Image (cartoon, rainbow, N blue to C red; front, side, top):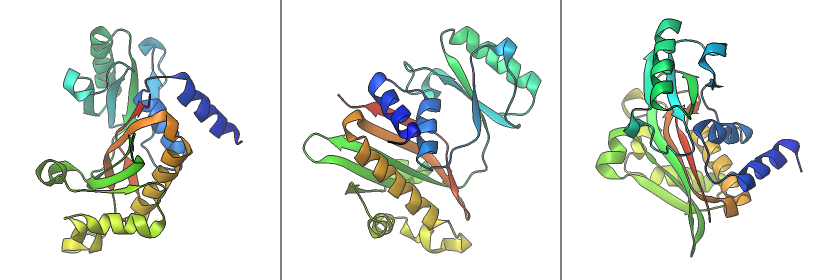
Length: 221
């Protein structure tokens, strides 16, 4: 077994709750793009490894919905502002660590995920993010594992499928999204017993490539 695969399996076995950085590192191991980020625990000893503008997010296994508790700050443009936010967050969340990541240009917002049903097993989901997710619940499901044609069919099941065929001059990288779905399917199949649910939301899809902005993993029983 590959060393990274062994480390990933040990992490999944050892922990019940996962922070965003841990989930994003899992995605990187699967070849799924995420923003460049670093973790800070000691503000005074921080050496910045990312470029401005950045986002700061509270990272705690006990906080699943960071935005709801005021644990996300976006578009921080310089070190002075960054230190101010980190000190504020440290006071508010004294036991947490903090994820600092490079801001990404907005793309077409997509969501994807895994769901483990006790009757049907592991399924994969893809859908439209942003207002599409709120207004239309525009999603498509398949049981894993999926093949390339299955992933393509999932996209064309969506009400917003015209977005993938050049609607209003947009030419999103459909192949990059299909690659993500295949990698996610393989991850779900391989580690099914450890996963209850996994959410990648949002994913920014561009004319070339994509990036996963936020990711959560809820462990199975």
